[in-house]
Length: 441
Image (cartoon, rainbow, N blue to C red; front, side, top):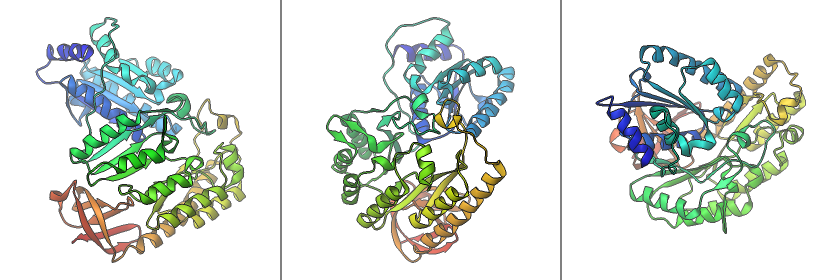
């Protein structure tokens, strides 16, 4: 607690109450990092605010997956200058995957000199040390602080089981900014989930860059699922992200028998063209991908499958795009996340000439979305009249939002706030395009 106490002493000496503003960009791993940062700040006596103008400490958790994400983050950082002018004592911290890259850190310190601390995702454990040194203008050599976590939800929890990635997909910077795969001890994971279940958490999300390559001594991902299934309590187990090359039939068999598994699988396809998949270094073919999901559906009939698709990867011609559309038709995803290819400096794909005009990429993206919308509407229409065990998620704008075990959202047109964080039985009463409506029984 050395650094925590130093931070607490500093802010207490200046403020009766001191607040932090934490903004997260990007994936669930970033959300999990933000929970660690919030936990540390809570231990140091901070309260939290949704208004950056009222904060004594501002933290951005950044994302480096796409170039558009970086540009958006730079825009948000630029807006902090006015806050610093009005309140010169506010401490501004930029952290994450984006700032793991030295050229980005150099750019921030050069172009945004009002930023106080800038460090990368691999260094989250030294945040308290860096903050303490900035506040006191001294260098310390005390050991790192123990981990703190302040969860953003009282019934849904992110549980990081591994970090990093060994796949080196040609378009992705994750192995460079997060490092190689490191799996947590399975005993630590199990103890964390036991405590979460004991404290009433109803949805457990296992997260990592590639969860199904998890490996701790004799425990692989399938055996980890089996150990989690031995934990008492009613909770739904979700996980992401999975890589198709590591989704074995043995793992699918385990999921089919699991009491807690939520019946939802997010399995990024990225492209339906074998030529493009090879250029992406994805290490599977479209035929293998379809074999995997067909086996999964045979073993788990109520499984919902979602996916990611990249449009306009360098070298993608019209025939490659048509192959992707063909696989989409065969795969019958419940929904997909679509992206136009974004070149990332330092990746293998950045060296491949990108000759396709953006207007063509946008046109292909819209055609893909139109196809998926039709598929989604057809799949969701089959839910009409069915009864589902759902977790009540939130109430907003006159609707209560629930999620099925298959991670499909059902909207209720009444205020059921009293059921938030609880499981209830819900009947689907009508479906309008891709929106499912129900009523609690």
